Length: 494
Ligand SMILES: NC(=O)c1ccc[n+]([C@@H]2O[C@H](COP(=O)([O-])OP(=O)(O)OC[C@H]3O[C@@H](n4cnc5c(N)ncnc54)[C@H](OP(=O)(O)O)[C@@H]3O)[C@@H](O)[C@H]2O)c1
Image 1: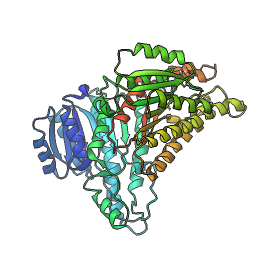
Image 2: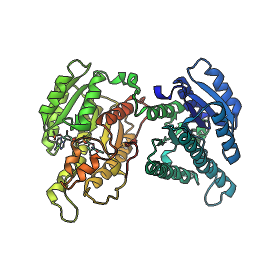
Image 3: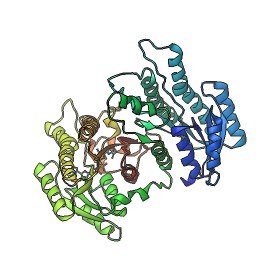
Image 4: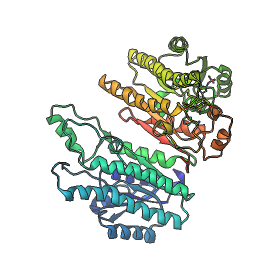
């Protein structure tokens, strides 16, 4: 976070809940935060409590449904604090109403706060960042209901999911505008499940009166940690490595550890003190990596395994249990694409992609869950997905064939597994990490027609960036579950 020290951040809705937690986390990391809200006295109180922190918290009164108040708040920041580096669009609300008989003014109010204010604040922040040559960061606090509408027994969300779906679209539209302008400003959407704040306490009460179990809820500080993580990416990344303590000396299995992302993840985990079993066909590559890590606190074992062969996978799990110990972390990373097409491709190529990317992931997951359950381990399973597991990029020369379908399957498998684990009241977590283009041997799977070279000329992530994302998701506390983490190189084209 060093590069944000003494820089100005605006946090909307900083008087309570998530906004207050974010303001506090940033001030504790030396950022100069301007908290905006109507209840300014709450922010002033928080500011007094943070008097000894390295940063500073200013309070500015602003009703974000009034454009003139937003404009004067931004002007105040520019005149009194300095160029804006970070904007956290956190202010948001839901109103008790229904689509079938609700009041128009309630709906309009929710849209004004959750969507219009976010657009206006973003425009003003981008203008200020551009004028001052700042490679800033805009964070939208979205919601899981920005991605699907939960089918509740008593549906009372009315326009709220629509406003958060709008935030999802606005994040991508802004990313595309910034990319087309060659801007270094980043935009991130963070989508929490239910967070314990004044606004949601009623949910637990309603749930209890309806005879349901109380909802599991996040703490506002958990979302603040996610904000600190996303702000930390890029330059001199330092994330919550101290929270990796609970995994010290524990066993992790990383599939596809002989190259690229899997090798980087294996290295990062060994450096955090884990006993890592790297599996792949090219075992000599893992052995070489293991030798370079002899002085690290953990250890890297190499096991030969072709994940298209179920008997290899079963043998590998037995070997790990017998020789290293019960698995605590499984990273389903092995994956590939093949140079073929849907209109005239070879069946065998398609089958191979599905065998590695989907079937092997399911088999490894089943075996890991079995061992975790037998040993009462609240483990963590990470699926290496892809941005193309969420949409099919419309490239001038389409060369992806069955690959996006295999990754869409991983997206669905992540949620299906989460639901099965929840049903069984398991403490095991499952996370999908969806990278954009990463510089690895993966591009060898494209045809010899210039695609590989074209891809390597795109903005590109390093395997270490993905390893850091894995460390972040593993570092979250036992009650925090990062389900999906999308990570792109800044300025990615598709
Ligand atoms: N690079 C990207 O742009 C990108 C972007 C998004 C997502 N991803 C995903 O990230 C994951 C890792 O890809 P990468 O970019 O690191 O690719 P990479 O450099 O080509 O590495 C692929 C790894 O998968 C292993 N593997 C492939 N087939 C296998 C099999 N039959 N049995 C055992 N291991 C097998 C390979 O090991 P051996 O050949 O030694 O067996 C290798 O270790 C994949 O799931 C990929 O879909 C990559």
